Each structure stands twice: as structure tokens, then as C-alpha cells.
Length: 214
Length: 349
Image (cartoon, rainbow over all chains, first blue to last red):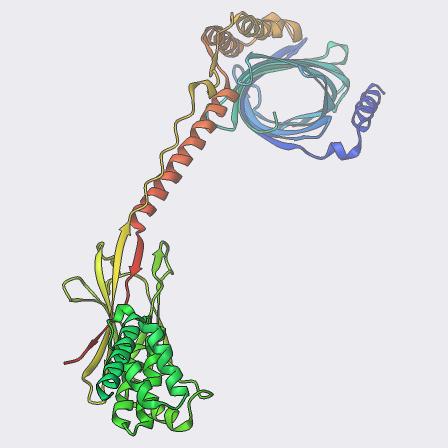
């Protein structure tokens, strides 16, 4: 229900301008690698895994909104103990708008799956995000912080999803004499099952190359 | 009585001679023509012959031509056909374009004139007094008018008599238009100096029977190089840097973002599960803030002013290149001025 409200709000923002103004202005493409650390905690114990994930993002900038589509995939292996290795696959689609130049509001689905030999755990999170950025060096270095909460969530594991939240902070630097930007970021999120049955968190250091679409 | 009559005739003859001496050659020609028209061919011959024996400069070419044709006609009617033919030949050499007026002269006169034209090989050469050849494609116009169909050689000769350029070898009937680009046979521009335009008329045996020679005073003029455009004045250049700021904002932003990275796990999860990897990012942000702080304290480039200055320099440089290229072209371009003198006829020995 909350997700519907957020989508409705963004739709109103996007339709409040003439359609002619919504033609794509530019297209952005990111390629990124990250090193995630996955930690699962439950009353009975926990497990820690880490690995390497590669992914990409396509950004279509419309006026006054933009659309971000991302996908990443990698493999996590146990840091300690005998936790089973698993694949991690994530995808998201966010519609975002900038009410003020330094702030972007985003909303959309975020899917995450852990594919292990014993079965696949699938999360569906409807997230609302706030992204703020500030220049360190005008037009060249940009620091940003992003926080998000899942306004609706589900998981195919009992007793079901209790919620999720996350944050990201980093710096984006324009590479000299190039249309490319580099990004270094730290991302952390946490998802919980109901009744405190289990808490899962993923922390990643992300290194990305961006082309256009800023 | 006889003595008195003789004295009177002597006085009258002396007066007539004195009167004749007082007349100009042109007036003598006019009197001769009137005598011809009065059918007094003997008097006409005497008067016209007297007028035509004057120096060339004393009689205009047109009067000389009129005198010759009337004298020739008078001689024909005095049964001196050879003399008449010689006079018509002299007239045609003087003016190869001369045509006898068939309304004035009877057929026996015009017929003889045409017979003489057929055997007289002469050419009139018409060249503009001044020709300015200042670009490719321009040429000196040379027009030949011939008495009758015959072969001619047309050439420009160097001051030492050597040939500079052969312009034509072949027949000419009524007239022929030629042109000369002012260059030697190898395409080079001749040095300044006096050259000759020579038109040789050849006889039926192939030998040169007559030549018309015109002086051509050639002047090579090299155009002055264009002046180089002056570099843009300093006042036109914009300031390329602005004084550095405090940079404090960059430092604060970087450090704040670094701090945010450091505390994010506590906000989202818990300190106990925080990964130390985040300090790589926090360090990067902090370093960016410090570098930004230092960088912004230095004078800051103003990109739009730098671009405007580069555009100004580029525009000036393009103008310089353009003028330089034009000057190179001008150095290769030679303007040639040709002043043609009067033609003179040289009879073959």
C-alpha cells in the first residue's frame, strides 16, 4: 500500500511537465565491481561470506525524472566456518526525481537472490531512497550520501520479511581529459525476518566507472 | 610687248609656286583630288605626287592613303598602269585593311586595286597600347588583318633578337585573333625590358617578304606583401584565473562524507558487524576533501575565459596563416604590364 502511494507521487511529478519535455536527454552507463561482505545473524548462530560482484547500471535521464536500471551478480564464499557458497544476484529499477539540485528522491523495486545448493532465497524490496550530493571541487569531485528504507518487503523464507534499510556514501571524481567518471562508495544494508528470526546485512566497497548520465 | 608678257608669266608662275609652297600637304592632297574630279588627271598627278613626296610626318596616314588611291587612279587614266599598280601596292603596305570605295571609283580602278591586293602580302597588327596581365587567364590580344591569304609567322623576340615565344605559324586570310599570356615558352615570366612582336609575311616561295615589328615594353610588377595582422591587444584578453577561495567548504564536505561512511554501519546495522573495508572509502573521501581544500586555495582557472582567450588567439592565428598563405601566393603571382609601341614595316631585301 505504501509502495503504491510512492509510485503515485512519482507519477504525478513526472506527469506534471509536458510530455514533450520528457524526451530522453542523455543516457548513462555504469560498470562496477564490488566486494560485498555478507553477514547473517540468527539466534542459533550466524555465517559470514564475502566475494566479488560485478554489475552495471543504465540511466535514462528524462525531464524531470530519470530511470535507473541495475543488475549485478557474483559469488560469495565463507570467510569462516562451513557456510555454503552461494551466488548473489541483484537487480533494481528506480524512478527518481530531483526536487532541488542537491537532492534526488528515488523509488522502485530492489530484488536480491542468494542461490545456494539447498535452495534460493529471494527478497523483493520496494524501496524509497533519498540521495544528497555536494561538490568537493565544483564540477569535478562530488561527495554523496544515500539512505533508503523498504516500504514493503517480502522474502520466500519463513516467517517472512520484517523490513530492510540501507545507506551508501561515496565520492565521484571526473577523470581528467575524459568523459568518464570514477566512483568509490561504501554500501551497507540490512534486512530482517519477522520475530527476529534472522538478520542479514551486506556491506560493499564499490568501484565504478561511469559514462554520461550525470 | 613680248618682253612684258614673258615678265608677267614669270611673275604669275612664281606666285603660283609660292602659293603651292604656302599650302599644307593635306591641302595639296585636297587640291589634287579636286583636279581628279575635274578630270584633270595630269594636274592631279602632279599635285598629289608633290604632296606625297613630303616627309611622312607632314601628312596623316588617312590623307596619305587618300592621296595614294587618287594618284593611282589618275595614273591609270594617264595610261600609266604599272605606276598605278605600284601606287596601290604602296597603299596596301601602308594600310593592309584599306578598301577602295566602289561608289567613288569606276570598275577599272577598283579592278586593278583588287588585282594588286591579291598579289600584295602585307599584314596590319593591332595590339592594345597597354595590357595589364595580373591574373591567370589574362592575355595580350593580338589581331592581324591581312591583304590576302598568305602564311605568316608570329613571334615575340627577346631584346637580343632570340625568340621568346612563337605564337603562330600558319595562314591568315582576312583576319586572325591571337593572344599571348605574357610568358615564355617554358611558362616563366620574362624579365622587364623591351621585346619585339614580329609578324613575318611569307611569299609563295616561302621566303619572308615583309615583316611588321612592334616594340613591347614589358614590366614585371611584384605585388607588395600584405601586412601581418597585429596580435590581439592585451586588453582583449580576459583574466584566466580567479583568486583562490578558502577551500573550507571542500574540506568540510569531504570530511563530513568520510565521517558518514565511518558511522553508516552503526546507523544501518551495528558497530559489531561493521566492516573495516569502509575506511578505504572514508579515507578516499577525507583525502578528496583535503586535496580539494588545498586545490581551491590556489588561483582557480576560469574555463570560459580561458576558452574565450584561446578562441581569440586562434582567430588571430588563422588570420596570420591566411595572410601568410596569400603572401606566398602573391610571391608566385607576377603581374605583367605590356606597353605596345607603333608598328613599323621592314621590307625583305
